[in-house]
Structures are given as structure tokens and as C-alpha cells.
Length: 171
Image (cartoon, rainbow, N blue to C red; front, side, top):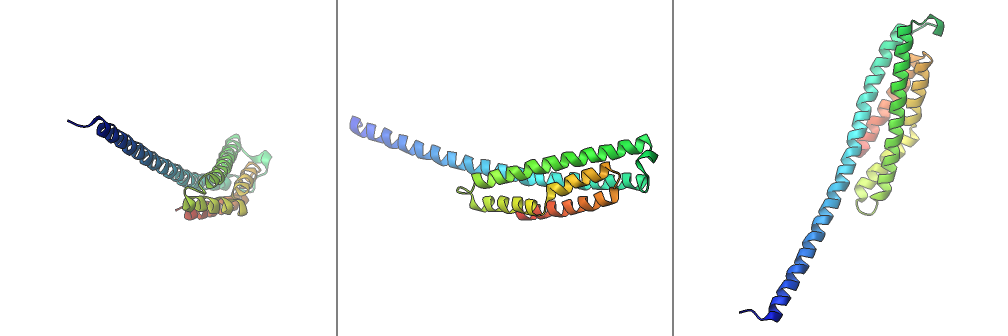
């Protein structure tokens, strides 16, 4: 038969071990959550690049049909095509702006716990800011709407290059 004092001590030790195990599991979950958030940013950046490439292709096609035409010479179908491309480009610019803001927030939030991820996010967001990715995308939308598809295409390709650069800094 076990001494009651010994039994209480064993229960106390078991409780402490459980607390340690719970703490270890919580730390693992926190690391997994950070990884999930970081992976989400990489995935969103890749998706943004893919959709930017698609809009660039579509703008090129619309631009071929409208090149050299004044606004009054455009058919309703051509106007609608330009309008839709400009709208899609503007939405991508807004999404890029939100993504860069999220990168900055995550960089600050993970600075202590995950310095490597924090630095990658910081570098990518600084790259986006210095290369004016969002502004290039917005400028492309304005140029598409003004039937300046050739200039818009240059802005779009530049935005694509900078989005690839951001991905490189994250991966």
C-alpha cells in the first residue's frame, strides 16, 4: 500500500508533467500558426502574380483591338473590354496594397518569435514599397481606362517583375 504522502507527491509530479506537456503543445501550435500565416502570404503573393499575368495578357488582346482609336471610335464591346480590364487591374492593385500591409504587420508581430520569417516579410514589403508595385498597378488601370494599353502593358510587366522579386524574397 502506498503512503498517502507519496501518492500526493506522485499526483503533483504528474500534474506538473501534464502542464509541461500542455505548454509544449501550445508552443508547437503557435509555431504552426505562424508557419500557416507565412505560407498564406506566399500563396497570396503567388496568386496575385498569376492573376496579374492573366490581366496583362487580356489587356494586350484588348489593346490590339483598340490601338490607335480615339474614345469616340470605340465600339461598345471595345469600351466594355477596356472597362473590365481596368476594373480587374484596379482590384489587383487594391489586393496588392492589402497584401503589402499584411506583410508589414506580420513582420512586426513575428520579430521576436520568428526572426527569419519577420525579416523575409520585411524585405518583401520594403521591396514592394521601393519599387512602387501598387502604384504601377494603379497606373496601369488608369492607362487601360484611357485606352493606352501599350503603356499599361509596360506598367503591368514591371509590376509582374516586382511581384516575382517579392516572391523570391519570401521563398
